Length: 204
Image (cartoon, rainbow, N blue to C red; front, side, top):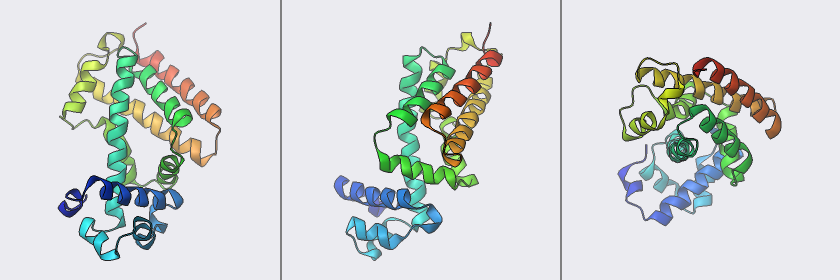
């Protein structure tokens, strides 16, 4: 995670460095990325980079964390839009990510992450629904999900349901990029799997 010196920078300087890092990680996966390219694009000395982050992995996982934060807020919005129907919310969320995401560089950054996934990268994505979280975000998710639709006995089971759903979504994202599926093919596959889950998880 970033050092305090990075957090103390003016907003514009922080954004410039993050954009430079995202550009490099969108160009190549983490193991091929170059700090030299990041600092050149950001217009800062190499020494300054190490005042802000330990290494390229540090800035990479900070970017993933920030990406996940943004997705969390969007998912809450989707849950509200779909009146607590978690599967409809996730399906809409998946569709919007693939079809309506306007930032090509952001998409390439995520694509590189998913095509070179490690356990640590997977955990960063899966942290959207962490069973051990007691955060305000997690509590908000539990409150928003319409439990009356679900075949569950307790709130604890909601975490298991969300883990199953996000695991299916994560696998579909990886498959979309690894098999070079069109958006239409990926969405059709995902919709079929979400409907199968709905048939098992929802009350009839």
